[in-house]
Length: 473
Image 1: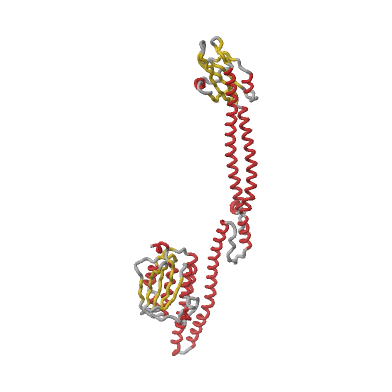
Image 2: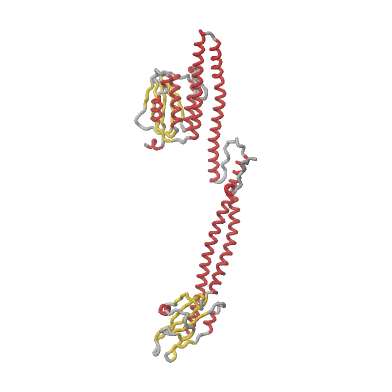
């Protein structure tokens, strides 16, 4: 049996289908975890510092108590160590202690030898000297204080060194850290639940939008309600713009199909009838039938050209990004293509453009098709000479076609520009789409189309707003 395509359910599919809520919660959990680690490190550092300061004060207090008991007897320092000094050190029950009393030259007068640092004696003359060392192979903390004597039979400093291992300090630091971690974990759990409910509440508009899109008919392109938070409203407006463009594209396609089916039926039937009559008629009338057949064929070709041109223009106005265009370039391009020579070889066509750029925002191809249709309309229904011109009035640029005819009657001018509207002067040679293409291009780029009878003839004008830089110049 051949293998059939199956829906992917692998890790990549699972990751791509993760909900936004799970992604946000994963991010929040990651931030809380990182924050918890940083708080734990900070709490441990704070606990160590607090334990060090607390037990350093105990060491210093014990050293000062011992130094206060020292006195000079017959030229020698004597110490009567009080119980209170060791009572302070006994607060750390599991720690071993060290003490040493040294003379001015570093000689141990009483206490233990070998654990203190001789280098700390000179520094202790100014301020109590704390340092870390080892006591019987175990890490310990020491302090050295100095008591100065200046008597007749003794002059100099007596040094008292007291040390203690770090077990109580470390236990205190761990207790402080443990308490901070417990509080942090409880607070993190509370924040996590709070974040879940807050995020879930904030995402309700997205959930509602998801349900609406899921329940929406695939062929329903009507705008959706943009109510909700600003972020959701922006997304809905973007969706509405997209659906509006899609609706226009679908509408244009439907119009093209319906117009093609409706408008081609009659000329195709007429061509078939003329061809059949030409075959059946005698030789004397065959040339007349063939002439009518050629006329019908030309009319059909014009219809097809304009229908395809209108479809192309409608497509580009929704898909091609508008750019800055100089209307003079459009007029010059249409003039130099010389398509009008096919319609009326003997007709005179003039060009009237100034030396100032007339820049608008539009699509070059669509604008060119519109002007071509304006010119073709003048060549078919107007009287030569015909002039293509560009002008500026305020903040609006105009590209126009002027012929020397009188133009259609007023009642006909009201309907010209609509699809498949023909004037009586067309004699069946017009598809009725030329000016509708012009009107579609004008509306697509915020412009307008006007038709007027002037003292020089009949003029059709396509007007578009100038580019901002052009308006300010």
